[in-house]
Amino acid sequence: MRWEKIDVIEARGFVLSDPYAPFIFLNAQDAKAAQVFTLAHELVHLWLNESGVSNLRTASTPTTQADRIEIFCNRVAADILVPADEFQGRWKQGDPTTPLGERIDMQSKYFKVSEWVIARRLLDSGQISKAKYDALAQEYEEQWHKQRTQEKENVTEGGPSYYRLKLVNDGYAFTKTVLSAYQSGRLSGRDTSSLLGVKLNKMEKLAALIAMPIRWRRTAS
Image (tube, rainbow, N blue to C red; front, side, top):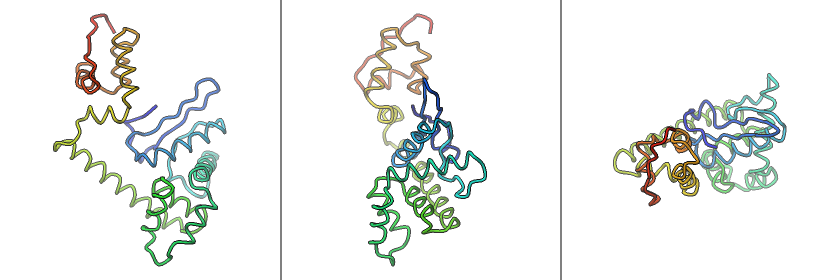
C-alpha cells in the first residue's frame, strides 16, 4: 500500500508486523529509488517481527531498543541493495580527487538507490563522519523538496494532470480493478474514493484515461 499524506521528513514508510496480516506502507511522496530502500528496510522489520517507522536520519549511535532495531534494519537493507564487498571495491577504484558529491552520485546510479543510501553506507563503514552525513542528508532533503515543488509547478503550468499522475502512481491494472469493482457493486463509492484518492464526483476524469466510462450507482454507499 502507499501512504500519500505524510511528509517524507516524518516517515519514508512504516510496517505493521502481524502474524496474519502484516502491512508495509511506502510514502508515495518519496523518490522511487528511496522507496526501494524503504521496502527492503521494512521487510527486515517483518523478518524480526518488529513494527517500526523508516527514516534514514536514525542516529548512528543507538540510545534505545527502537534505535538499535532501526540501525540494524538500515544496515541489512543496505547489504541487500548495496553489497559491502562490491561497494567497497567500486569506491576504492574511484578517483579520490573527485568531489564527494559526484562520487556518491555515480554510486547511487550504479546501484539504483538514492544518494542518501550511499551516504548512509559511507557513514556505517566509517568513511565519512556523522557531521558530514548530516550535512549531506540535509542537502538531499532540500534537493528533494525543490524537485517536488518544480513537479507541482509543471502540473500547474500545463504538465501532466493530477489524474494522469494518479494513474501512473497507482498503476493501470490497480485503477481498473478498483473501478470495475465499483461498477459491479462489489465496492462502495466511499471505499472506491479512498482506494484511488479521488473524490467520487471527479472519478470520471480518472476513468476516462483508461477508456472506462463510469456508470453511477444510485444505491447507498
